[in-house]
Length: 147
Length: 176
Image (tube, rainbow over all chains, first blue to last red; front, side, top):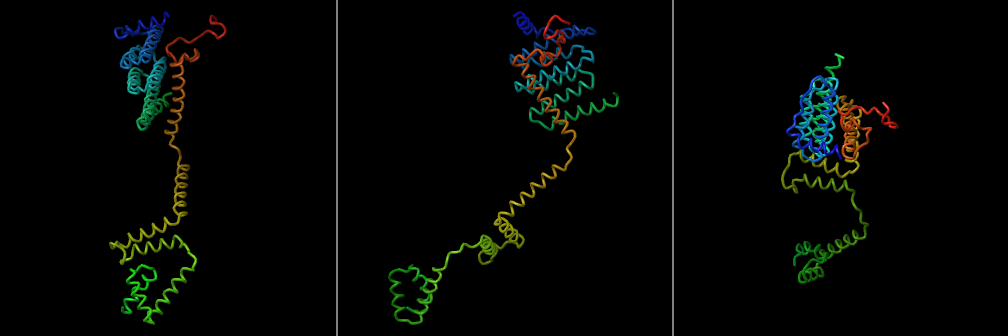
């Protein structure tokens, strides 16, 4: 009872609340992201899709250390799955694109290109899907000799 | 009635296509004219003979040949077509009249397509892509289950990727 109440309060206040982006304190970043993630899921559940990209951006713009960027990728995948469940591929594209702008590591970028490919595929746009997938392979290939 | 007119009317007379008046005229002439009577008897005999013959359905190729010849015949063809076009029609009609030919041709083409597909090496990117899509579809189903049907705690990562790892065991939640 307490947790849904708290989440509802956060949800109502979310347009006004822009979490600070703490640097250097991973635990703080993680806690904010954890809560904000629940807010985004609530927005999707309530089908307030227009608010989703902005709320998701609050997570992406937190300063994630590079070794934690896989969590942003996972977040993009979860949100895109939830949005695809509601057939909102347009918002899913936007969320993944926003995530792409916030990650630095080539691995994360490559994974997000794959996610775009998956959304295109779900839309039946096979050419675009294959193009995004090839882009991800290109990044992975560029990365391979360095590793 | 003249012999010439009687001769022309004989077929219609046998087929009973004449009016009663014309019929009577022909009958009167046949009673008087020996040569026309002989011609009538001969024609009647031919009719009776052909009626006794068994009915034979001609082979479809025979009909196809007749139709194609009629089609290209200047006497029956409405428009004179170029020779190549006529030949093409003839070949096509003959080809279609033999059912095993189109069927075997189509089967051959299908076999060729399958063989080419089988021999063609698969595009590595496309096969990798299709593998990725399969994996992602599995993940999508899993995530949907977790997100929309209160998934089990074991799938925590599929619910919130920012949650702390669960360190307690299934038996004792206080055990580190």
